[in-house]
Amino acid sequence: MSLFLAGLPLWVSGFLIVILPTAVAMGGPLLVRRWVALERLTLNNEVAGFKFAVVGVIYAVLLAFAIIIAWQRFDDAETAVVREAGAAATLYRLAAGPEPEAVETRRAIGRYLRLSIEKEWPRMAAESESREVTQALDALYAAAVRFAQTGSRQTAVLLAIFGQLDTMTQSRRHELELSFGIVPVMLWVILLFGAVLTIAFTFFFGNANLRAQILMTGILAAIVFMGLFVIVSVDHPFTGPVHIHSDPLQAVLDDLDRG
Image 1: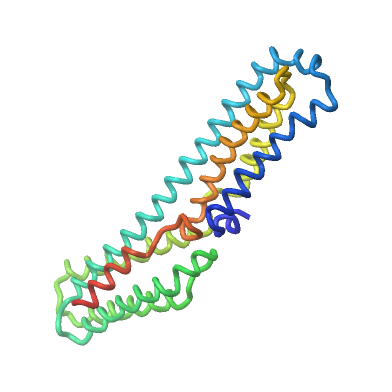
Image 2 (image 1 turned 90 degrees about the vertical axis):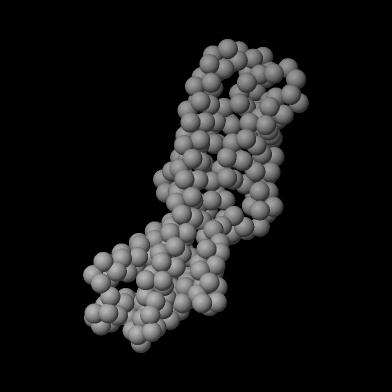
């Protein structure tokens, strides 16, 4: 569900996650007031107010924790892309030279970057990975091994080459892992169930001004659902309007083409 919502335009997902649930929540006090008299609800105010403060704080902490973790993991995915691009650029320069094996290695780097942009990014947006990119990475390793076997480079240079290859591999794997979603299903269940309970708690307060109570419920619901909206937007870092672009890889590829 989070993948579906994350893939929608922001205004559509905002309507489904924030506006529509908030409107439904604002109808809660009306329904409760139909069945329970104001005098009975007023008796709950003193005790329920203290309990609601505890419930609200607990849910606020949980929601804030989820938002921070989701944003940090989103930032981790962006950092992995930049790291992969930097490793590819460094590897290209380490493989400089007229030897056929060096030329083959540089071509393999360009092919890997091109396929990553054209094939991997759309696949990661759908929680998948590209077999072609995996094969391109295997071909890059094979080209680097043949280049190392020529003995035309010092050991330190060869170690640096395979170190950059390792960085590219780990960064890609990290990107693929995060593309499947940041927030686990259990946490989503707790966040949604907690949101419903927290908002429903306000229905049982008694306020002589019903409009004011409905407005307060709506404000609380909007804040809660906006927090969930933020989490949904970044839950899949490579999906939807709020996503990580392949610009760092494209910049390196353009630089290689100019070279």
